[in-house]
Length: 372
Image (cartoon, rainbow, N blue to C red; front, side, top):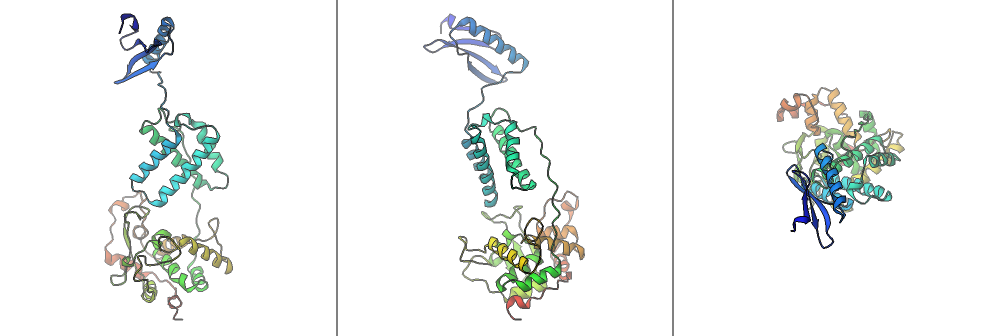
């Protein structure tokens, strides 16, 4: 390099003439990281002036490097790979994929195709757009995914700054869900088909989630030991990623003894209609909604009952009839308790079975087995 091809501006910064065209570039360090920035001029005087301004910005800590030009598609793909590597449930991966697809569509309409183009106003725009036809809770959850995505991009150095890091979300107040009464469940059991009676009875007396009901395998129902096991398996994790077991109430036990699952099938409740060969809980909920309307009970998420309502019933009924809250949490798989009892409370098998046997359900198991 010739002597007149470089010049020292200060102890950290020098300019260098590069290439056949002789374009000047600035060489300097930011912390321990070496940077080279093209000054885009062949004029020495102009290069010196720009380098001096750059030196002043560095001294003030105001230097901003050119942001990396990573496409929005590449960022989303990288984030979803990370989610999959954490062994999240298939349902969670589908949800994240759907939210980020909506985000890409909305941003592309604004001409945003690269991560560095996203700013805080895009977050507000997304939130306003998604409010149309969606509940406040759904919008909040989607915005949390948006923020998590941008935080990931910053941590992986796909963007220089996270434009939504300082933005705060107000969590909406949860809607008080009305649990069905025991008499209402009796009426429901009397109105649904024989095939659905056992499913509803099991949900109401165990508090299982619909997905947990769907993924019950033959070995999970242990009539000899009097347990239903909710196993978190590879590829089929529970919501919390933890396994648990629930005692079988005497009323449910009578009905289960009459039920004959397919021996050659993998699932306790099998179906030939789904690709997994298991119970279609969406269809079950649709049949429940039709039954509720037919017998004059409130139906639907807004202000009525769904499959999940039987879980609410089990918790309310159990607590109101003497089951300790922490015992109920263990049965239902709740892990969000912040009290010390969530850490120290234990319940042995004898205590668990005793709590369940005390519950006085007035459900008649005979119609369920078809022996009325």
